[in-house]
Amino acid sequence: MAGEVLKKRREELGLGIKEVAERIKIKAEYLSSIEEDRFEKLPVAVYTIGYIRCYAEYLQVDPEPILAIYSGHLSYPPPSTILPVSSSMKKVPFSYYVIPPLVLLLIGLTVFIFKRQNDSDGQVKQIAAPALPVPAEKPQPEPPAQTASPVVPQPEPPAQTASPVIPQPVQPVPDVRSQPRERAAAGTGHTVEITAHELTWVQITYAGGKSEEALLKPGMVKVWSFPDKAMLKMGNAGGAKLILDGRDIGIPGGKGQIMSIAFPENRRVVKESGADGGQ
Image 1 (cartoon, rainbow, N blue to C red):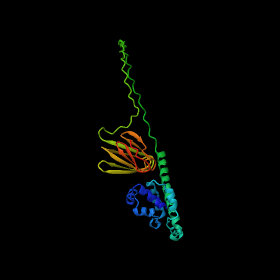
Image 2: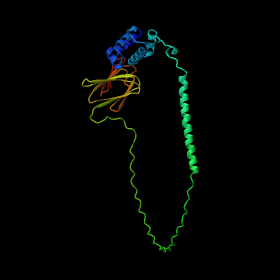
Image 3: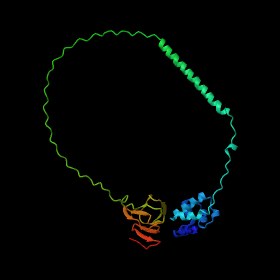
Image 4: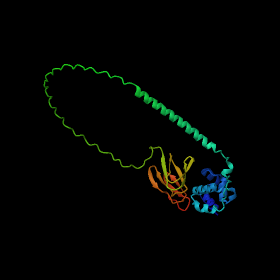
């Protein structure tokens, strides 16, 4: 059955039903009903299809074959009763549609006629006003002509000798080619950068026992820093590329392979379909 496929995959990844429910935000009882094919415990089809798809993608299982099996058993909500529009609305008198436009039309005509009358009165007053006489300008006496003073030639300044140009030494152009990535600061520890190209679940455990995890979708980048040592666990070793302390160490494993990697020695421990690939 389809539910057994999801349950077996979850157990292979070493995940509990409540742990998965907290990560993908779906009730644990719904996930149990999906694994045990208890269709009467599931909500309507619109929600159940989304739960199945999200659960399968988190476990890195193709959701389409599972949805095809569930589609014949999912329950759909009954169609709602729609009341006729004519039975729920009261008839409006015809005068309600005619009187308001007529009132607005009368108001508009009144304003237009009043404005035209004001414009015509203003034009009549402007035509009737007599033109005021323009005073004649008196001619202004011209100032007496001044006698031009003789122009005394000025001696030309001596030509300046151009100072010799001293060539400057050519400064070498620094090389701007891209440099390899380095650690953020010397003596601060190690940094691992994970770039996902497929859906990948990763978990890092530090030397003190503290752990962090993330579900990376294609295109997402996650960077972790640690002072001494750390253990990285990947649910899909072929779905992401790793960079340790600025050095590209590539894709650690195959698609769907569960692997643990010890840093900084980059020692790989394969837990599924493979052998220890330590370097």
